[in-house]
Picture 1 (cartoon, rainbow, N blue to C red):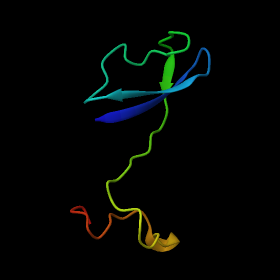
Picture 2 (cartoon, rainbow, N blue to C red; picture 1 turned 180 degrees about the vertical axis):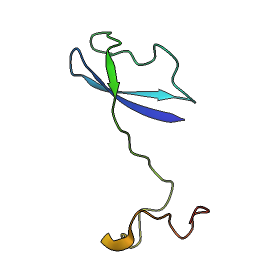
Picture 3 (cartoon, rainbow, N blue to C red; picture 1 turned 90 degrees about the horizontal axis):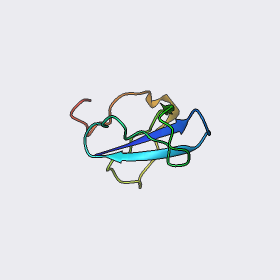
Length: 71
């Protein structure tokens, strides 16, 4: 499941599109004006981890967490 963020180039409306899997053609229609002249914005990813615990230090870099299979 994915949540895509868009901004309409015609009316400047920002909106989200929820999709199971990849977006299909036409799903990126502005809900305000109906335009397909939209640009996808960068979306952040949410993790399923706990929000409690110490925050990472500024020197921790961009490495994978110790509990990750990619670390």
